[in-house]
Amino acid sequence: MVFKAEGICPKCKSKGKQVSKDSMLHHVDDISYIKEQFDYYICKNALCEVVYFNILNEYLYTHLNKEVGYKSFSTSNANICYCYNIKKQDLNEHTIGIIETKMDEYPCACEVRNPYGSCCRKEIKKLMKEKIERG
Ligand SMILES: [Zn+2]
Image (cartoon, rainbow, N blue to C red):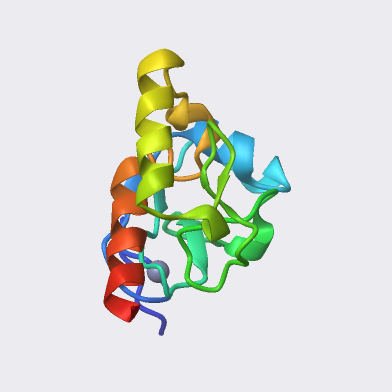
């Protein structure tokens, strides 16, 4: 029997963060199977193929209508900032500054545009740290 628990990623077993159905409707390629009665979660483990899941099903990164730059296997052309179109390949301290300046001038809409349904800054800083550590 496959172990399944509410809010726990069925693939990597890490704890998911609940995500709104609006996020799902924006980012999943086929919305037919999104059910009102379930709670959906996002798996933030960069090495895990699962992006969204509920107690019964999962949506892999291939089931989204855009690339998720925070997943380690996404291409360098994937977005890491979905509000101001910053790609993974452009990630550096300078771009983080650009994002922050833009956020002051043109408020971000991460809850709508970012597949994680939350602000990109935390994820970007995590990626930046990994990049520095890799050298
Ligand atoms: Zn996972």
